[in-house]
Image 1 (tube, helix red, strand yellow):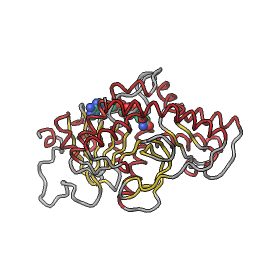
Image 2 (spheres, helix red, strand yellow):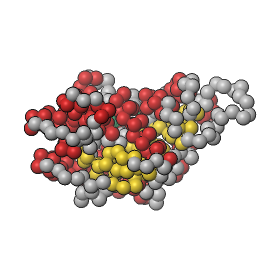
Image 3 (cartoon, protein in one colour):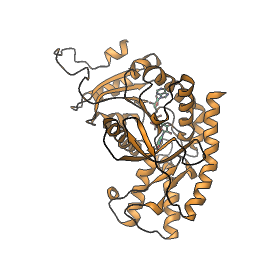
Image 4 (cartoon, helix red, strand yellow):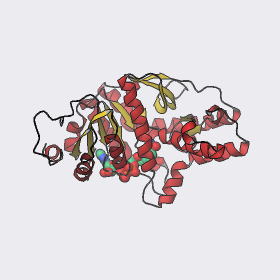
Length: 338
Ligand code: NAI
């Protein structure tokens, strides 16, 4: 593929024993949608991750520039760019982890579900490529609406006979990152010391922070609970409005995506006790997918934790979340089955 060769960088003068093939220890990671608002800072941060030996950057536009730029960073990962759908299979072959931030973001006044018509088709196509070229890869799905795109991916993998529910994770880490930040602000703590479980899904009322389970253990007034829950649920909209038409969260999302991808890679490496929240195939509720704390291992999701004790406010929130989630999940499944 001419694009692949051209985009491996201009360094034609290279000794035979060089590590440009990325054969050293470490994982092979592809980013699909790598030239976008999330994709670019995500590519930069993944190039800095010592667990990554090969980084494939795929998009339908602008990958040559992004690849050239990122490839000059003096960190370990070998970077290769892939432009356009004819290069999707080359981009995916041999990957251990595929991160997907491809698709359109929200503009002011839009819900995540308004993105369904465009992003559903994009995710379907990309997942068909994954079943064909790297069916064992861990998939981190960022494209919205996550509550529907994860069921879409699962249906595509089922159709292809490659579905392993442990390897498909919807990225809800940004909700956790926001919750940690906003709770730390209220408590006057360093956000690095705060751990807020956020369960349910990734849109509006489906985002359910469990403030009764915050670590370090603490208590909130009813006003604080109302303020924090609303702010965490609307964190994305806060950014969309501030950007006023120029997109949605990209920098904090890239940070959250890397935090999550790094946890997945440490799981793949065999590290013990890696626990993060993610939207996964789940039996925690009666719904087929749900976000909650999961333990990551060499196989992806090794264990899904139950929600733990909820207070009345959270139980009410859970009922609302489940109602909306059920519709979004069905919509995703129907899109592939139709
Ligand atoms: P963007 O528009 O800046 O970038 C998207 C990139 O995807 C573009 O470079 C575009 O060329 C590319 N793309 C479009 N079709 C493609 C295809 N068929 N194959 C490969 N690449 C393709 O958008 P941004 O801000 O990077 O957001 C991307 C997605 O992430 C949106 O759906 C957004 O809603 C979602 N998002 C998810 C969050 C989460 O917490 N899970 C948080 C923030 C955004």
